[in-house]
Image 1 (cartoon, chains in turn yellow, green):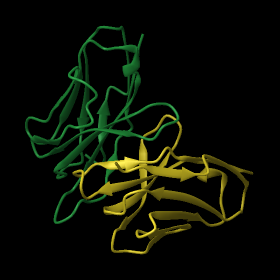
Image 2 (cartoon, helix red, strand yellow):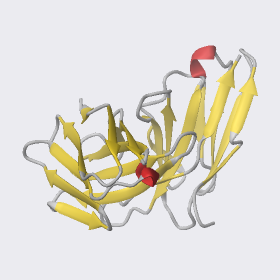
Image 3 (cartoon, chains in turn orange, brown):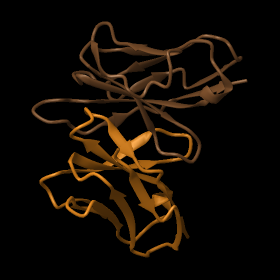
Image 4 (tube, one colour):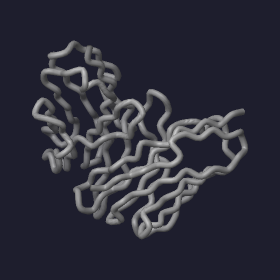
Length: 113
Length: 115
């Protein structure tokens, strides 16, 4: 059974810092990995999608990497801003178990001004 | 529509009542998913539709939960004899499925509170 773990569970940084969020998964047989942002009381906003054949994806100040063989992904946020404060979730799309996404519990990020 | 739309955004009901939650996916998306999210947790898979049929309903917790998508677009999640433990945010997502699974887009969710 696929398990997704996110470390740290919570992170508080001053504005302007670069930071890294970690995601690990136990079964490397995945189609892709997706990073989401969730603001309090809101739905999920897709940030980046990395296909299993890719190593990384970039969007603005965000960069996500994928090392499928070791079951790891990182989300790098450059020059953090207070508006980046949210919960960040990673999810993997299984090969063997249909098309469901399996989510981690998320990292709660607070960027202080 | 421009995004995934879910109604109602909030639903408060009493234990034992019947509840329906509606999801209107992005136009043209063939795949539709229901997830449930409890406070402080990541979303948990409930059911996945490809077109009109439920391709995977392995996440439905018991037979009180049922979902339909009769015309391959709008879906309704139905919960019978609600229990307090059913309280959660119910999220719907859709994606285009071509030669491989595509990116999932989520709605804002329906927050269900069972008193």
